[in-house]
Length: 79
Image (tube, rainbow, N blue to C red; front, side, top):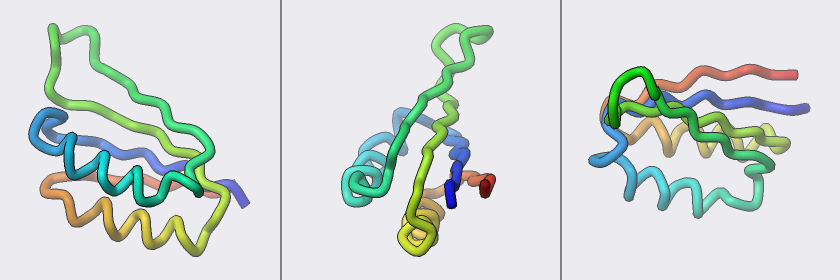
């Protein structure tokens, strides 16, 4: 099973340190990480990150940890 998590950050600057700590803790299950910036707005503070995860049990733990970050939104796709 492959899981894609789409993470929408309300403020990249404020949430960056906390987000990076969580992603580092779960780095062994993250197969791919893509950051998407909104280039139509000069230096937007919002951001989207896509993660590919192949471990469904730990993906749930990762998702729970990410949701502890204030204002974060997550969407999930499962293949």
